[in-house]
Image (cartoon, rainbow, N blue to C red):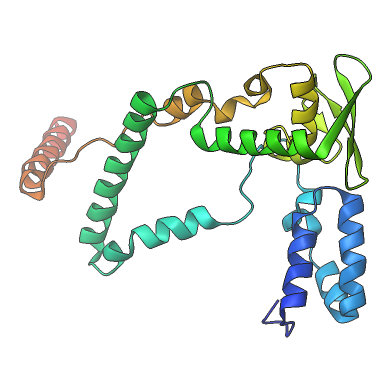
Length: 241
């Protein structure tokens, strides 16, 4: 946006509000506000497919609660020391770093994490539950369907069987939003039963079960290379015969 010549805090806030919108109706409202700020900015943003930058147009099939590329930035920051090294030393540093990191994550989850879901997801669930209790009023249609009225005047519908909410936050992240938590808590159900499996401790442990295997030092590589070379020569001699 800066490269296109659009700078300023108002433009930045408007862009992020459109990007964080979870429904197409909310997205349209944000885009109208952007056009009021600067019609050229609105035209510039309309040239970008919203499916690439706004949650309102994201496919709900891949469940993810991360909106930015902070994972890449975090990894790049952790290998700053390695990036100053020569290629071989850099690759060895990264390999050892990843081997240790994977092992530490695996051991931490196995020994410290209690319950069915990962700690960070538990905190998000608790936060949404608190918001649901203070901001929402659940109106029950049956054991599955709820209408949720919020004190800000908004209203959403929740389907506990399909794990969906009309705000689409539950659909996109796989974590019950405040509307869903209001409905879940009204029936005194276990909210952890409504979270997708990818956030479970069991899934986390399965992901980190494979390890990066240790590697012998360079002093042992020549022997291995010589053995492979000798084997190839033997095969060629046999084929010639």
